[in-house]
Amino acid sequence: MFKMLRKATLALPVCLSFLFSCETEPEILAPYKEQAVIYGLLNQKDSIQIIEVGRVFQGAGNAYDMARVSDSINYNSSDIVVSLEETENGAVRKTIILNDTVISSATSGTFDKSNNKAYYTNEKLSYLYSYILRLKNLKTGYECSAQTPLVSVNVPAERDTILITRLPRSPKIALKLDVTKYATLSPTWSSIPNGRDYQMTLRFHYKEYTNGNDTVYKFIDWKQALITAGNIKGGELIAQEIKCEDFFKFLQVQKDAGVFEDNNVNRKPNYLEIFMAIGGDELSTYSKVSKPSSTVIYQERPYYSNIKNGLGILSCRYVTTPYKKKFDSTTLREFAFGPYTSGLNFRE
Image (cartoon, rainbow, N blue to C red):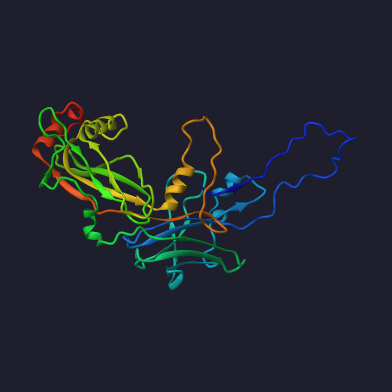
């Protein structure tokens, strides 16, 4: 969230002439201090790295009105240089200058989203090195920086499914074993150096079609509980239990959420993907500090940032290649006739 400063109205209940002088008006706005607002998650697996860059603004008008003006929250791209330094043991191996681009969004909200500035590079990053992000304002001399390692996955991207073990290796996946018994998946993995948080996702792909055979391909994600490793050194054995009956219960409640509300279409299960997202240490801290409290009605949350002389977060992440399986016949029958999904128009 960008930091906003707005003019406040000061009400003085009593102004007693024999105690106070009311001849001077208090100064509402403090002197402006330039601060960039930066959000970036580096992933060596991505073909492009994108860093969102904005700035803190201040003015005497309505802060919400100013937030809707692109120039209030964005730098002029010709005024700043944004770069990544690839470092090894503290020494800079190379400097990558980031290009500017515009990210538009139709999502409504406080801040202008029609002309959001971001900075990107297509340079290939490596888990062997750390990266320092630097921003410099050529007009004012202002500078800020942040540093992050990468999640140290040392296998080729196309083979990183081997990071997750104890997933079924049969040609098709069985979520229902027989008439009465549901399967349980028990994936395990070893924590990765520089990886702190781990979240497994089951992505259910299905098709919707009408009698005219118009087919739309869709998917829905069932996210598992986030697991935090005890350290970022790697090598910690982590296990997670996934009860497949809960998957069908999850699909059942999606109708109330509007996912399967159209009863005029037929649906056919297509396949299941299982993948894991790994978040870096700074991202983990930022997420936990920013998370709303569940124990009090209102609690002022501290603001966490690892941007030196700025605001925001620079960290790393990694998403494994999906483990992909078609469903076996027993599971397909469960979609169509099972107690949780029989009303969702699934066909075998």
